[in-house]
Image (cartoon, rainbow, N blue to C red; front, side, top):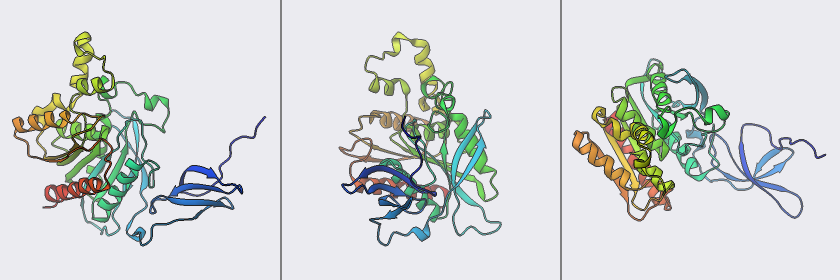
Length: 323
């Protein structure tokens, strides 16, 4: 029989993609709460940096803390809370909630091992460095908290039960001693864009603004993108449920401003989802802005477009929450 698995590294770091060279030395990628990914070498059960980002402003970053709050239906939800370093006694700041994509994902207390979320973690750190209180929410149907959490009843197109987690997160930060409860924003991409739109559509009295990056508008159309044989007319009961679980079903109560960002060659969430959302917002008289990347896919290929998207995100929140 083989030996039981045992950890090779110690501490709070995040390590992945191990490889062994000809001499038996182990190399891997590793990150921490304040250092992005770099090549590491294992030495005495400790990761030793082989490469590092020169002049990276780690001193401006914070170590997020793990928090657990109750969802609107009572389910315990984990999150990472980023508190700005310059918070003063008695001061209240705007707050931003981040929702990851997937939904089969989990955000961590450090730079993520997947590129898309590595960028998102860096953005949350940047927003905190600019004075926002930021909370990254690991909502139900994500991974890391057991099968019952991952397969939570009524998630997504089957009932949007994750909206309870959006609402619970909003109420948690609203009641935080350091948060200005009138200035709570939402942002996220893909599934996170979907939950951002759900929060704005169903709870504009709680959420003051949002940035929806290539998010779902109508599940019936997005399901067809992944399951070409899906025909809403063949199962009208489920199709109605999928529609009611989508932002498009709650447009009449959407009042908060939003920035919509999308690449027009998206193969995961069709660009038409943002077109439909913009048209519905226009009919509703809701203020919105758009940033469209020609020939860009779901996980942006060009680093320049990541920068543009995040610069636009920060600028939008500055205008909406700190004019």
